[in-house]
Length: 218
Image (tube, rainbow, N blue to C red; front, top):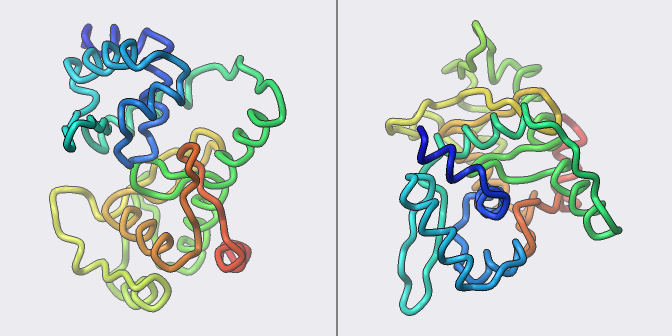
């Protein structure tokens, strides 16, 4: 616990973790540029985050890529974001637009978050394709066809140690969006089908014209 708290206490390391919340691995050099530090400084911070068990670092040729150690790390970071006071006001048009983009749609590790994620979850609940029971999400077997038809995702095929569906409290909307194996599969399908697209400058997602029609119906 002390190692994790110490790793999170530094502003630069916290910013690095925030960038990695998008789920995709990022080269050390790209992380350094995004948080505004020298590559050598970034390497020191990444080493501390790796020792704390918050990230993993893989070598790809001469480059090193960092990513969060797992979905449980992303969940903890999102929980911290919900309780942290929002005292930082965006400065300049770029930061204002960046904050707005994050709120509209973003990847929360491997599932959809922001307004788009909450709208999608609300739609699934309204259709009965998702049921909330005692604070948990349940996928009725008779709703599997909806996921196959709409997203090309068969919940019956999503085996593994992760829960099929679970609520993840959205830190900007203050309401739950869909996480778990099903949430991850749906985001992958949305990306592949062109409903949303990744941005090169962070974890915000662009909602395409096709996606706007989908989320507008939610």
